[in-house]
Image (cartoon, rainbow, N blue to C red):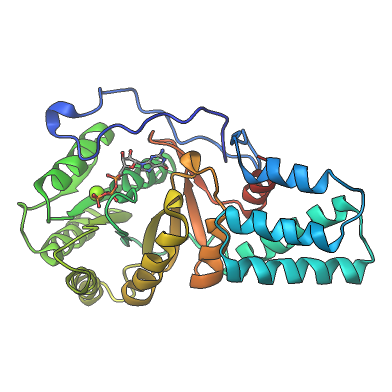
Length: 331
Ligand SMILES: Nc1nc2c(ncn2[C@@H]2O[C@H](COP(=O)(O)OP(=O)(O)OP(=O)(O)O)[C@@H](O)[C@H]2O)c(=O)[nH]1
Ligand SMILES: [Mg+2]
């Protein structure tokens, strides 16, 4: 799921029509295989682990202390790290292992257990139309993720409508329209400043009457204040629910991996108040740390469903805990 590719500077956000990326031939979403194309990360956790575990054949207390520091430095968070180290030590004690390769294996197992504990793969759409609400702070990658998901769904043979629920900025509506054109997909939009609930309602109604499989609703990442933002998201959910009981099927929280532990506080707020069912962790390609995924799942109890690994339409991979842990501990 991760590829070897040098990090590139991000282009400016919210392109106006003239600044839109050149029309390129859309490639199909990449096919995944576990561990495919692990990306090298200078200064990543892997190098640090090799240094720590390479100094002696047997793990000592000092080894565990150094591991603890390395995991915290990789954004795993102090609480998660302590708990993880304890669990890995326990696991080794029970197995009688003390060699450094046993330490690595124990860490790997415990990491995977934690990532899988919140469940995984829960990405069934159910009966059409499936409504997918996409939330997250501004700049986290919501709109880009919607385009990537739309392309993925279409490659699976499903029809999709995009809804421009971020009515806060005209540029946001335009950005989704551009994606709609590139993907040849219908975009339901109103003017800037319109009620996002009304946009969601229109999109759901259009999906019902046209027999569309999935509605992806973009939302604002920032309003005048947080209370307003949460109220707006709640209203969109209510509007959808009233029209289609049991929907939205998914509320995806888009989180930028490079914001590390800071992002987690915001994530908790969204998770509590917006009824988040799954996470998309974006910009893993640009994150030298990346350990935040573990802290997210531990703190929110919500599974990571997809990983954003670049800015192109195909740069979205189903989150595979085993491949992720391998990448985290190796690169
Ligand atoms: N490297 C990288 N860049 C990404 C990824 N996902 C999104 N981006 C970039 O992040 C920037 C912001 O993405 P948007 O999709 O506009 O973010 P947003 O959450 O919709 O932002 P607002 O509409 O302002 O709330 C853009 O430059 C994207 O190309 C990713 O997985 N990797
Ligand atoms: Mg956006």
